[in-house]
Length: 278
Image (cartoon, rainbow, N blue to C red):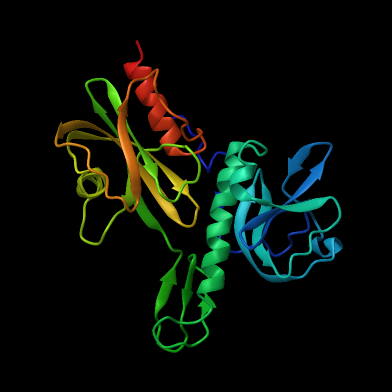
C-alpha cells in the first residue's frame, strides 16, 4: 500500500485556539457536494481568515484541527449558494484535482458533517445533544447516551485461481465496470470470517490463504475498507443475482474496465498485475 497518510500534513484537534486569526481551510458541503474554489483550471479548498466575506450562512461547523499549521473546519450550507469563483463538486470527481492528502481529509470532513447533522438528538430519549469537549462525540445531557462518529467496516478481496483474478459486475455500478467482491462486516464476525461469508454469498466460492493487504477510509458514505488477498479453494461461480450479476476469472491481459486507484480495489488489482502478469 502506497497511499498517503491523512496525518502527513494534518493534526487532529477538538477545540480551536482562542486567538485564531490566521487563515483557515474550510471544507464546506451541500448535499454531500464539496465547495471548492476554481480559478485558472486550479481547484482549491477555500482558505480565508474571514469566512463571513464569502456571504454564505453555515447551518453548522465543526473544528477539525490543523493542516500545515492552519486551522481547518468542516460545515454545511443550505440552500446551495456557492460564492463567486466557487462551485459545488461531487467529492469523487475531485480525486484528480486535489492533493491526495487533502482529498483524504475532505473524506474525513464529509463524514464528520453527516454525523453532526444526524446526531442532533439523542437516539435513546430524543433530547437535543451537545458536542463533547474531550472527544469527537455527542452526549445527551438528559440520559448521558454518547454517540461517536459512525464508521462501518467493510472487506474487499482479490481472489486468484491459477493466475487468474475473479472480477464481478455489481448491480449498483452502472456501465460495464467490473470490481472485486466486497461487503460490510456483520456483528460478531472477524474480518476474515466476513471475507469468507461475502465470497460464498455473492459468488458461491470457498477461499483459503486469506492475507491482509491494507485499509482505506472510504467516505461513501462512512466506510473503512479493509483489503485482503485470497486463493481459490473450491466451488463453481454462482452469482447471487442481487448484488452480483456476473463474475468471471480473468487473466492479466483480459481484464475488463476496472476501478481507478482512487479506491483500494484499484490498488488490489494493481497488486494482482504486479504479481501475475507474464
